[in-house]
Length: 272
Image 1 (cartoon, helix red, strand yellow):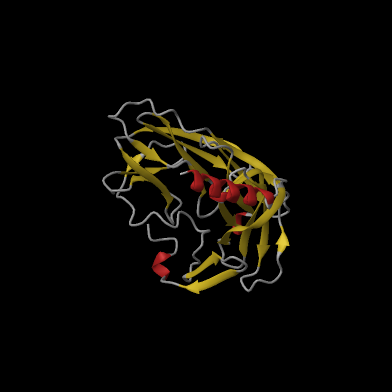
Image 2 (image 1 turned 90 degrees about the horizontal axis):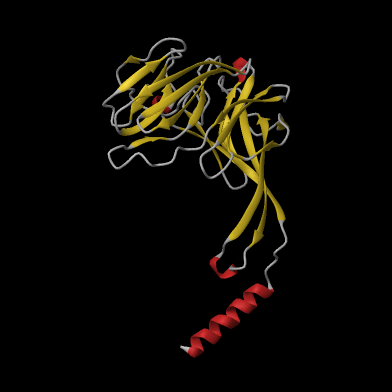
């Protein structure tokens, strides 16, 4: 046992001697989506600072000061240009609603689930549209199991933004915003049974909230009561701007480049 301890100690000292504990800037492209007219791509680049920890043998690092910046680029990779300033926090979802004249970015604020939603117009001005509150404490008891990942999604025509989150043990709140005017239009609260829920838009600009087992679904419209509706045929893509173009071309981010490949057109938005 003593021999093993000595070997481990030597390894740890050796590893520490080659470790740099200074904070280093890091950046790389993390998100890419098609514009809603398939003419361009929007790219999200993540920035942060990183350093080695005091446990180098476990290959762990510390990260801080997350931010992101948005770029536009042609599908062939040319004409890449900056479209936003640096925005705080860690980018999660990105949409490019070109026809409506803006990009929508949803970012993590903290590990408790709080998020921010910014609209960035095509001149680069960023406006905070909505703040999504942290996830509520799970003190509802074993009999309550409501699962919904908080998320903000623009409508296919770009005129509305909907964000949904679990606001109480048996309740889901859906807020409708105008991304152009940065105004709350309506807020609806649904009391729902136990289950896992997802939200998606339909091509007719109707928002659908449904259980993933397809047992129940509601159609939601601002300033109108929710209406029970057939469950969607699919949940992804959730709106017109996504990783899949209308013609069935999938865009993805590689380690050093953007790749576009063909897929079935049925996987594009509209399968709902």
